[in-house]
Length: 181
Image (cartoon, rainbow, N blue to C red; front, top):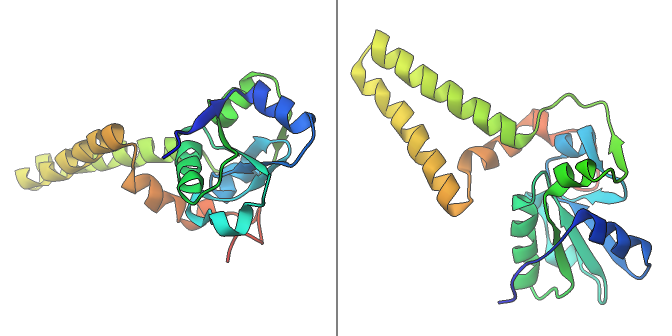
């Protein structure tokens, strides 16, 4: 299997500007995309990424997300389906914006999926500890479960809570009518 090729935001912009068949896909949730995205990026949420429907012969695909992790997963999916010209934009939208490259700002107030996971995990830990203190010590298992889940997510780069949160209505947004098949 071919390894994921990573490029800087500046390299991605140069690639888009030099012409040819180049398409940038933002694989975040519609709400994240609606809030802020790299100018020229099309929305294609990671859970809806279908190699057969997006890849055309000779087209270079540039994938971007919030920080690079989801884009790398998308690249792996496309590479395993036989797509050849696939690139992951290192550092994602965060790096794109920090580099001063053009972005589109929307009106969405939804916070990033990564922050939602941190808030959710912290809340579940506090609830588990509170219930263990007030009701029964066995509720500490909730905090232990969340901690184990965070360790697993850190080791495997797969986050079940993030995948669940991505499907929540506030993260589905109205930014893309064509991606809600």
